Image (cartoon, rainbow, N blue to C red; front, side):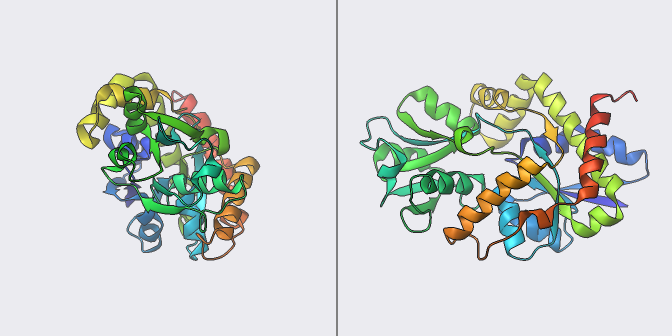
Length: 302
């Protein structure tokens, strides 16, 4: 059997797993192979639904959108929170002093990603709406420059781009993502895969944690790979990667509550087409499978 895995390059666990041969080794022992598909985070759920892939991973928002649009996905595992992963930035000399001052302004962000969850919650905490009180625009290659030029009011930076912007010292942090949301990587599959092959989901989860363990111990090499493939400097990538937890967890009640809060905020803002119940996408069997797989990843000799 061939297992198809979606790789969203902004998901560090999947990104490194696709390059290390760890899953190939685990599946090869069972006479199976893996094919990697580079797929954007916003396309992951549709690729799962149409059978292009069997497993994927993104940030917190795409699975909420998928569930709201009727895709029957289930959560497999999540990363630990990523407190240093992203931030809402304004120009250093901007007169914007708080999130409230963004009302009527333009914010560049990766629309549909975890950044939407982050910005929507930052606004909601101040009684503002993502859907009514700002103009959200999709980030582009020149978003940082647009911020410096005053063409936009704020920008959500993450990873190496955030490290580079802060190093230059021309921006100011309006809100840290980690102060408002858990900002986890989220891994999911189709319900039929979870029902019929939970052991496969366990092997993938185990391999993901092995890739995380490798990255945590090889930050320089991981940074060089990312810089060569995605651009930016290896030094900025290393700083960004060093801030990540490199630890996976089974789905928990706390995670479901985090996702439900996000879903409620996004539905109220009109970003989701309807309210959803996040617990409907929890597969109790996979909680046990993930716990066992992660324990095995910590003791690979067993």
